[in-house]
Image (cartoon, rainbow, N blue to C red; front, side):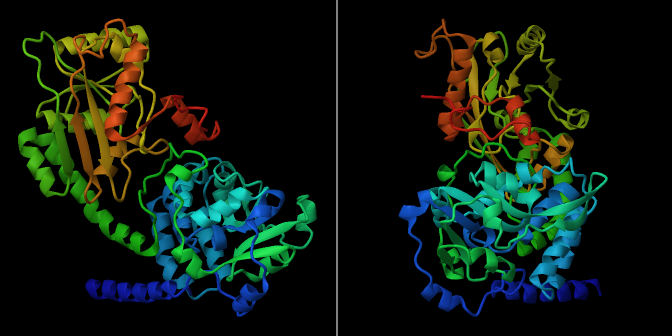
Length: 523
């Protein structure tokens, strides 16, 4: 009986997805005048754009996809939790029978109702990554050439304004406002930005305004775009054949972002996630049990059978006759870095941490020691641990998901000059195993819930005083920078001067986006 119901639901969902593919579900409906508009409207002259104001339709011309569902799903999952996201997913097929306006109202209600205003940071910490991945290169090039940029969007302002202004340098954002009572969103639109003919005068825009929109422009936008001197029309074929914005073309580097979902939650991808979560949770608990109960030589092949991938490249050679342990210095990707290094070495190492939850300490299969952030006490503690055996330190102090390395704290270089750098990298397909605003004790669980989580641990050549490029008179800061550069070269990561404090300030919204001159090393 249950199997039959599931099959019927999947069949119904398949029909809905076919309708979405044909542009009929939660998409911007077209106009019968599309062909005539394209023939009569003059082409956009990009040479004059620096002296003009560009009125850009975000969903219709700037993004490759016109569907807003993935962004509301991201917000529902990250800010509202799993049950809210599941409710939004269940309502998705039924929204196909509603008008576009009412479907948007349903998504706003389900996503925002009951969310605290002060706790809603997803628009700043989570969504920009997915927005940037959806930006069309061709639309971006037109936008950047304009003298003044005005963005028009159907999404609420709280979702998209930070991204448009801080990442794309948009001057004015035309978006709706949500109603707030007692510090909580109620899921209703309080004020929809007026799109009448007086908008140009109210914002004091240049009278020489050009527009960039799609043929599927809603009726309430026509009065606004009718004021444009010329319009650049973007068809669905143009959007499908357009290129994504390369990461090297980002106006500002995306170094820090938060959230658990590592994929774009389209309807079919969300279906796969919800079907996987029950099995993935059991699989994660099984992997955790194997790691805690069996020796490395036995647990490693069993974990590999479950889908975990560990690539080991030990380059460092053991030093004979050493009177103390080896200091391993690695970049920080997840809380599991010390465990995977132990797998690579086939022995336990002691890990020093700056902040670790009590639950993570209890579940850790290796010894962990917390630092006090008092330089003298931490130095003495690390020296004592190194005399007892092998020691691992992550001098970045926090994790970084993107291919960047944060500044290395030089404390490890004051203990010994015999260092083994370790280059760490991870690969996930569904969930991130790190968070800045969520429960950090769940980080290992989310990482282990991935179908095929991957880890790469590469031990580099040991650096000693006898090494040609390893001078004794180097300061601890110079040593830390050398180790950072060595790991960065192996991984192909960019070295920065950003710190743990910078990361949490940025994700908390207390400081702006990092520019090239503020955080990157100058060469």
